[in-house]
Amino acid sequence: MLISPEYMLPRSFYQRPAKTLARALLGKLLVRQEGPVQRIGRIVEVEAYLGPQDLAAHSSKGRTARTEVMFGPAGHAYVYLIYGIHHCMNVVAGGQGEGSAVLLRALEPVANLEGRSQGPGLLCKAMGIDLSHYGWDLCSDDLFIAEARALHLRFPRQSIVARPRIGVDYAGAWAAKPLRFYLEGNPFISRK
DNA sequence: TCATTGATGGTCT
DNA sequence: GACCATCAATGAG
Image (cartoon, rainbow, N blue to C red; front, side, top):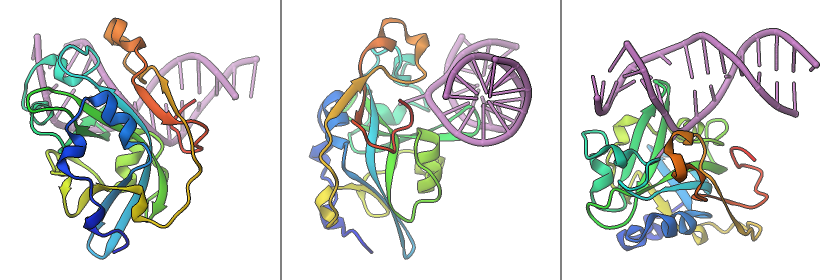
């Protein structure tokens, strides 16, 4: 094992507004333990989904079987299937019942990723994440997020850029809000 | 390089 | 039956 759970982010890390959490997640390490293999990717691009008032958020459609985990405690994974093909992974943010989450959009490969991870679908494919991870507690072994200092690697200092979210044109004024965040100049961003 | 389109299935109406 | 927080293949320029 490369990263010890000692570096796992605590529940309290996730208990803040999605917009703040999104920025805080940049540069952190997504870790999946699969038997003896540890897959690691550095989070370089995310999107914040603020809650039922945010017309781009799935939670704006109400509390359903699919969105239920979004309304639960922070630090759990909201995974869904999109276009019948790809999986997307979110991290539940905020307080209980808020319905906010952060979509993980791109990783910089660090260890054992299968192929590219630029884009939410590719990210899940590279990490081996699917619907079986729906509701997964990220404050547990096997799938968690760790502090960057868990690795003795040097990453360049990059500032955070905010842009409109991808693929949410249906959301009216909410589509234009700068809730997509990424590390400026990082080569592993999904799109310019 | 860019725009267009097909794949494919869970969820909600 | 329509929609979809995507991706890869295609073809025109």
